[in-house]
Image: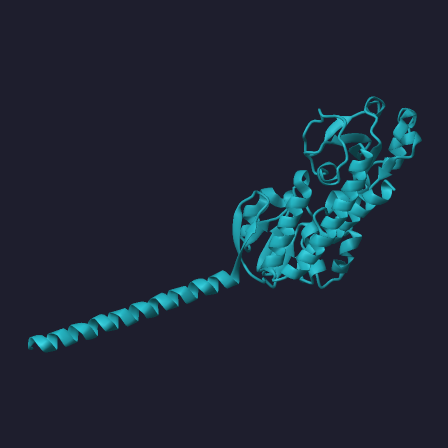
Length: 317
C-alpha cells in the first residue's frame, strides 16, 4: 500500500467516525428532549423535587384539596377515599365508577392495587404510609402549608397544571383567587380587624396561630392576631372560654370538627354558655361558624379556597 492510498483510507475512516459520532449525539439529544417533554418536576410537601411522568391516566387521589383542583381542571381520576361522607364539592365522585379506596387515615391498599394506577397523590394524613403507596405505583405527597397558604396553594396548583398540561386553566383560577385575597386584605387591613381562630372538638376548644393550618386568615387575609403567645401545634392550643374574656378579638372564627366526624355536641351549642355570652364578640354577634367540611378536610382546592375567602368576606360585611 503506497503512502497516497494510506492517507485516503485514513481520511475515510476519520470521516466515518465523525458521522457516526454526530449520529449518536443527535440520538442522545433526541432521547433527552423526549424525556424532557414526557416528565415534569413537582415540588412535594417536604419541599423536595419529584420527577413524574406527564399526563398519567389512572390517578388515585387521597387529598381532597387536590381532588378539587383536578375536578376543576377537567382531569379525571379512578379512585379516592369514600368511607364516610364525601364533601359536597366532590359529590360527583360518589358515582360507582369512582372506586372507594378506604378513608383518609386507613387506605384500602388492595383496592388501590387493583386499580393499577399510574400515579397516587397523597396528603398529610397518609404521609407516614408513603412507602406502602410507592410499592404500588409512583406516589407524590402534595399538601398546602397553611402558614403560607397562598404561596403553597399556588405552587401545588401550578405543578398540577404543568403535570396535566393545564397551565392556562390554573393561571386563570389563581389570578381570580389572588384578586379576591388582595381585595379582602385591603378591607381587613384598613379596618384593623383582629380575629381568633378556634376549633371545637367533642366539648373542647383549641386556638390556632398564624403559624398553623389556618394561617390564611392571618398571613394572607390580614387579620390581626392579638395573642402573640399561642402554642404552635397541629391540633391547636387547648383553651377555656375564660380565654375570650381576656383576649377580646373583633371576630372568632370557629371550625366545628364534630360536625365533620359526627362526634360531640355542635359548636353553636358549646359556645352558647354563660361565660362566652359575656364577651363583646358574642354580644356583637361576631362569632362566625365556618364551613367546617371545607376548612377541616379539603383546604387547598380551587373551589374550596374560593369558598373559604368568600365566607370570610361575607362575615365582615
